Image (cartoon, rainbow, N blue to C red):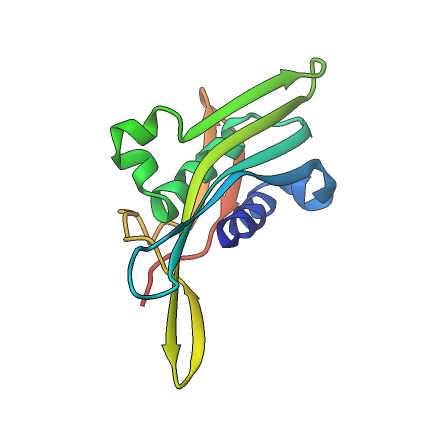
Length: 162
């Protein structure tokens, strides 16, 4: 699942704690379904719930939620565009361990389109990009404020596609 690995990379990029302690981040693919495209090819769509577990997290949950929302807008735009998908496409549970840390369990309903086509007697398999939605592709520096206090900063890559 390509999106799961992209999310792992993103969260480790934006959280110093997850970079230093990668075992605090666990990803599980739940409720997976493969749906045939119904065409004269073997193309299909993967549908699954990605369960992202962040253990013993000491920062604000918004340090995780904001980059995930940006990822969703770019890579799973139906979760923000479609009122039905908004209802349950991005959910979470937070367990307070103590005064300093929480365990987060985040559920994202994701899809990945996979094109399978024959070329010269061989099947070529390619993951297809989502339609472009990010209206701020040039923004690469992010800051999270709570009140007037700067809590976190991070850098992302320019997401402009060729």
